Image 1 (cartoon, one colour):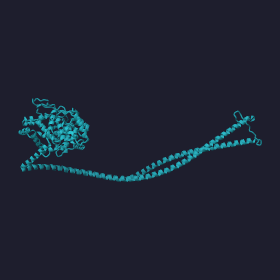
Image 2: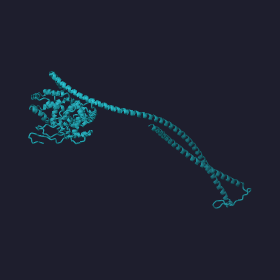
Image 3: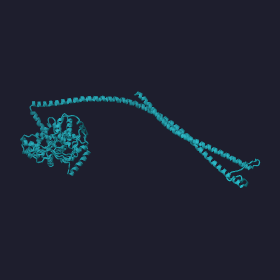
Image 4: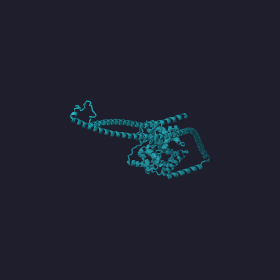
Length: 608
């Protein structure tokens, strides 16, 4: 929106969109305090300033449009091949990475590639440390909270006070201040953390931040009175003398020193003022090639703004660095042109080493020319500060030592008590084990005895059963023989009776003795033994003998059937007795085991 002032244009951040929230959800990030959720789309948008705007308001940090779309299919294919090869051997970086990083890492892959470049892909140790650090207190919390509100205000993810972005940024900054006790929290650190948070969850962002500060030596710029930072200023000044001599002379005439415009470049890695597209590309090169990339980008910025800077005075130059230079690279074309110039800048590590030696020699000469008293006073002041810091650290360590001793003493007492209880339990269990083994042995002996007894009883019953089976078989055979013999005799008698009837009927006198039914109908004859035919007497005697033998045979058959029934009952009784004996043995065994167990339990209870 434009104000009433004719030459003043102000901008309001309308909306910022990103894909990072989706990435966080996929990563399963779950930390304390993460209760806000917001949807973000594929791009990151800044206020829609006109590129040609001459307004005096500086560009808000976090501005710029970063699209995730990649139109170059060959580039995506190349990154795909590199990542597949890289994941197979994380310890060795593929050779193609450096050349691809110079063109810029695709936005959709930056989170993964940055972690791989920093060497902290799936660094569970740092991520677990982060989860612990965020629960601790930091003496810099008020300073951190103040800086959070000024970090990336143009970005929707960090715009809302108390929102998800600011809460995540606060936790990372506080965690690092606790993690790095020597440096703690420093201004500018939040901008770098915010850039990382836009591409990965909190734990991974913290891991990459630690790697940048320690492995890429960013924290060294804040140590020992910014001595390393002053060395960087001197190296940049010497590079300007060699590569942009006229611009260096102009700065000297204006009385403009390097630290007046380059401090944020080194301390924040260009993240505080420049558009996000350029910031992310610079971080691509920084993580790929190292800390010296800062000089390449700085020289490229100075070269591409050379004509504008030569035409300005002291105030105009400072305003240009603060306002107009960042706005110059809001488009991707301008940013790509700058990064191409940075890549081609003639900044070598050999040249930087040479400037470093010059700086060290110069500082030694200054110290020699300096008044010894002033030098000693300054050294004394530094030593006093170091002494106070060391004393404070010593006190802190002493308190920690005492607390640790008390904690260890308490833990030792608990462990000793637990050890004593475990020894008592071990003794009880040993005795119980011994008793159980003895009981087991006794039961095994009883079991063997019961098995032997059952085996003998079973053998006896099987023998008796075999004997009974033989007897039954013999009885059956005898009965069969008797039945066959009886049937033969009955048949013979019937035949003889039929023959006699035929003979009687053939006699006219004798046939009158039979009625119509064939039954004999005779008066009681008075037989005179003397007059009886001897043949008839013999036949009658034979009949009586046959009848008697038939009666005896029938009687023997009945007796054999009775004996068969008795034997069948005896067989069933024997089988039942065998089955009952088996069940009785199993029941007795179970009862014996139960009685022994009850006896053992009864013995244990009085001891307890």
